[in-house]
Image (cartoon, rainbow, N blue to C red; front, side, top):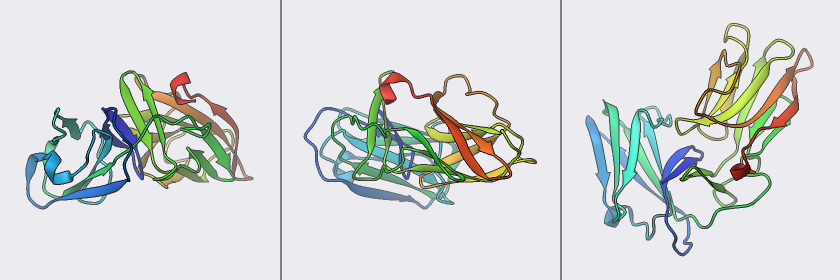
Length: 224
């Protein structure tokens, strides 16, 4: 299975096959349900090299803990919701090719008030890596923009629960920022990378000059 962070983080199924053009099938949820199955013949992907993205009724990417994705040997996709949902969308994108090797894949960088992951990644120039029997896809750039914070605040970027998370080392009462570029989340009061997460990088906030510096690349070997 592939975890995907796309414009983005999402869950994907993957198996060896010829590369095909990317395209997206969208299933719209219009009534209360706890489970949706989309057959291989319906979504039309010719191989298991596709990403599954699940969104709630507000267009927000749902984490694995709320939308569990699986696929059988025929390529039929099932999404189990906990709790049930009454609106939303399931998007299946593919087909993707081989693992990528670009230096920018999942790389942390900073520019002014922006702390970025996978700068330059998009649907064509995506990042696809494998770790612990899972595949992770980024088909967009994750950008955290800090608006205000005290000097020396550390922001950590990591993957957890099928999401790209920017953890701010300060409470929300004293720091403020926003994610853009891909579906990601901002957590406050984060002073270390949580257990079970995949660390990507960190950056330090300079105030009152308002820019990030001292970027640390924390990617494990499989993501470099």
